[in-house]
Image 1: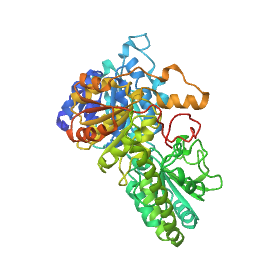
Image 2: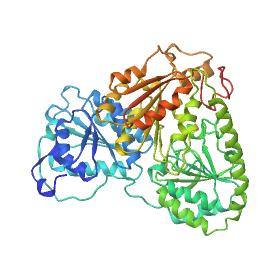
Image 3: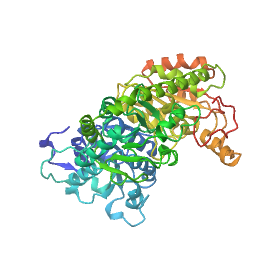
Image 4: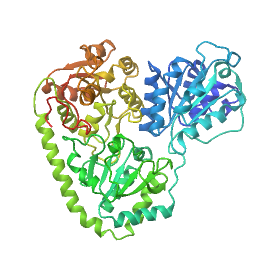
Length: 575
């Protein structure tokens, strides 16, 4: 990074790059535009990670932010390129991930003249960002960069968009007062909840007959997993997670239920643990949006329970369940809540613990035996349960598991094991857009270059991002990519069968050899047609430390335990 003596005679593009570096940015996901910025950025220690499509680039910045706890930066040109950033920014907004998008505008003198690819970017981005501004004055470059990063990382994190006209980027930017503050890590200003509310929460939990904690993705964003794990153990309170909260606590802990919500149907780990949710009299939500999937369409949690809700965003607290409002950072608040609980009589909690642990252990053991029986089959095409059973022992606490939307998310979060609190499972659950799995894995790998990264995607979702394979080769990213190739849009086809008794033509694909596509892009690619071939190929891929794609021919009749399907889906199924 340039020192302060070298910051006196910079253009706006150079000053933006210098300010980004001050905020800790080392990677910017972008193609060639804004060219002035990308030419300047390397001088300030910022690498350009060149994506092939903007929607993938936005998902890369999202995945990078989730793993690094630093702002993800993505750049784009005005017009159609900018419009492609809308979906990934919507995802980041929904799930509170800080992303700063630097978007080039048409030159100032051409504004509102129907210039080439001109569009109203403020209106375009306003619904999917916490902050959208245009920098028109060269002397305010540092001001606007600082505002963008503060908007992205303070309060409830989310995306911020900085628009800069093309000609402004090349203007000289006068050096103002020296700046040292860095706003690139999050949460930027963690605040503890009202101590009186924390004491009330402790009273409710200590006196409860059957309390339950439900941890969402906010636990990871606030780095609260260790604090939650200590509270779970020391205070004898069972914990369930949402899909995005997967890994908030270890699945191996005797008081961990697993993932709850919309896939608690027959064959799921938590199917026969539903009573621990429905019988709970005090439920504590932590970093949890209480959205449709996490609540099984708002049918899962009991009306008669008393609710406590810890969240940094007061608008989320009580959105769907009237609750004791505990508005604050999850980590800081859980730490104080644990201390408050330990000052109270927890004999009821500790006395109830053995029976709860036995119940969880019994049902999880029965579920594991059931899955093992399904996975033991050497049928072709291959059952996804077999893939999960082969992968699970290979995962370490350091492995970053990424899944595309739809079935891939359910198979991985529902059937793989978080061995430690804080283990990461990345899924696009804000908007659940298909095709974001591999881009998010790329962002995660660039955030943690030494970590093993494994990504699962269905062939439907993977079809959105084939071109991204070239980026794996260009940046030498050792991601293991597994495509579940069942030649259908599984969730769509099966959902249509349940709802309408038939399915639309678009649900079925012609055969595609994804391994051949991978090889054409310079990756190693293998097609897996028999179950016994998968484990040795997976071991080799994960050990290779280079991009490898496994195209696995999976059973089109296989579907995960979605509660909406119930027993109405007339397909061969072992559950």
